[in-house]
Image (cartoon, rainbow, N blue to C red; front, side, top):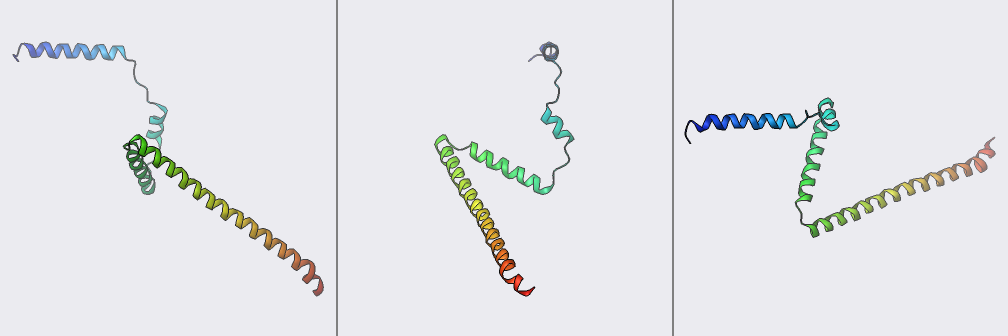
Length: 116
């Protein structure tokens, strides 16, 4: 290029930038950006969780359609199995509490009266 073209190109670039700035309104930060700027610095565990979640999300998004469906269904099945196990534990705890309550009432009714 010759040196005479460089000033013309620079001037044209400035004109295009001025047109773009005039056409687009000033950008206001979104609510999420404002929240991020005001949010405290995350702890190490929070950063690790975000990192792991982003890596998992990236891995999942890189899968093909059929494999993604199989992995999603596997995740749903695993989640339902964990939920079932938790519900079984809760129901066992409630049953144990009822049995212990009944045993306490039997003790109070039959054995506590004899001593008084």
